[in-house]
Image 1 (cartoon, rainbow, N blue to C red):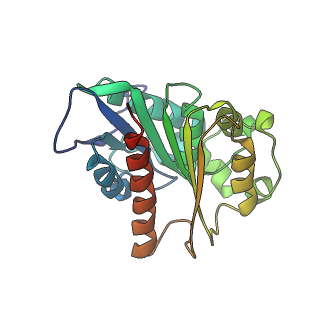
Image 2 (cartoon, rainbow, N blue to C red):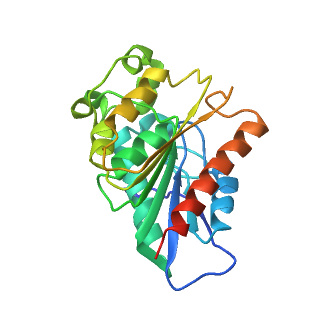
Image 3 (cartoon, helix red, strand yellow):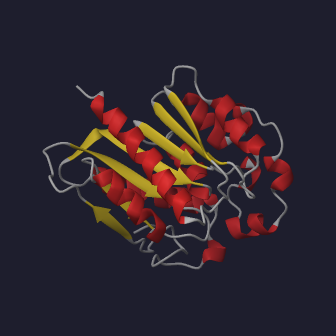
Length: 237
């Protein structure tokens, strides 16, 4: 519940739940919903994580009209989902991962500056101007934001990039080779913002478009995400 409105999601558990399990929160993109993320969450849950997918307000089965919500509102949703996840029994609060795509990647980046995040996975993360943070996102989407995303932007000039620059844990950045929504410059802005102390992985899904419309691209992302998570868990004491 956020500001009196319900946000709905799905908890996915591994077959064997231990006393202290890692957990991963999945955050979807603009006008998307949790449906496409359940298969990704199940793949990660197979390796021992308690996962949560959910719908931002105005999306899927969550309450509210899409046109009324700003990034400030949706960030509240992401924080609420994170807090719900870490409150679950048997979740290790020191091993929380967040995976976000596009709009969700932008929000996930900012979340990492608000809550304790050990692993951050961003797929084709978007960028928006800070000045418009309280304006309903639907109005920004209708504007021409392509010019902004084509610009070289310093971390100090953008909330998401600034959060990434201060993040000091494991970071995975996945881009689509033929992304028609997120330009290469936006990806480079994120890459250049990465803190040198971070263990950073950058993957490119060959020929893929922004939404991963082909099954092979969806499967490739699941494979990248699962292998990364397995590697991280193999290094746990």
